[in-house]
Image (cartoon, rainbow, N blue to C red; front, side):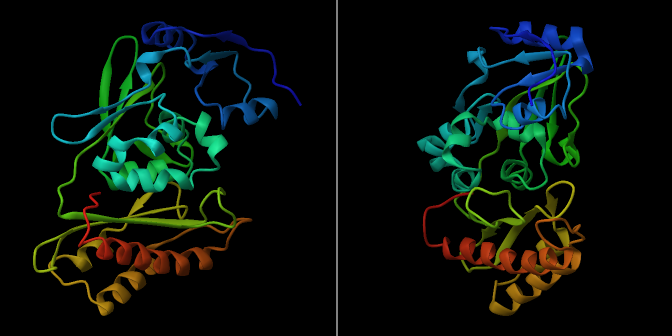
Length: 294
C-alpha cells in the first residue's frame, strides 16, 4: 500500500517550518527520521493533507554543552550521533547506554531525538530517560516558545503536550554530580524490539554509602513513563542492602498497573518490573567506585 495524496514542503530554516505549521495546523504532519510516520503513511493509518519535512534545517541538529554541565540536544539530532558522542558519554552516560537499545543501528541512523520523544511510545527508551533526568523540552511556534518539564510533557500513549502549530526543537538534560550513579535495564523478545518492561535508576550516595536521593523510572508498563515515588522513598536515608533491594523490588511490582497485550501479560510485566528494577539498582550501586555519572 502507498500513502494517500498529500502536499509536501521541505523548509530550509526553522522560521519557515513554524510558519507552515501555523498555516496548516492539524492538517500537517512533521517528517524527521520517519521511522514511525512513514509506515503509518504507507498503511494509511495517517492521512495528512500536508507533510512538512524538517530534514533540511541544520539548526536543529546539534549536541551542545550547557554552562552548568548539562546538554542541549537539537530535536533533529540522529540517535546514532548521540550514541557515538563523547560529550554524551562524558556528561550523561545513562543516555549513551540507553540509546543502543533503540531498534537496530539502521533505525538509529535515521531516527531522531525529537521524533522519538514527540511520538511518545510508552515502551520507548528516550521518553523514560528524559523523565528520569528531569529533562526539559523546548516547544517553538511561529509566535512563541515555551519550556516544559518532562513530567508535564507526556500525557498518554502517543500523546504529548505539543500544541497546534508547535514543534519540539530542543531537549535539555541537566547535569548530575559525581555522587549520582545510574543503571539501565530492559527486557524485550529480541535485541532491537520495543521493551516489554524497562527501568532507569539514578542514585545519589554519600561517602558512607547512604542513599541521599533516588529516581526509579519505568517504561513499557503504562501509558507514559512512570516514576515510582514509593520505591524511591524506601531508599532514602538508608544503606542499600540486599533486604532493601528486595523491598524496592516488591514495592515496584505492587505499584505497577500495566495492561496485557500480545507481547506480555499484565502479571508478567508486574513481576519482571520488580526484578529489573533491582538489577538496575545493582548496576548503579556497582558503579559507585567508578567515574560514571548519570
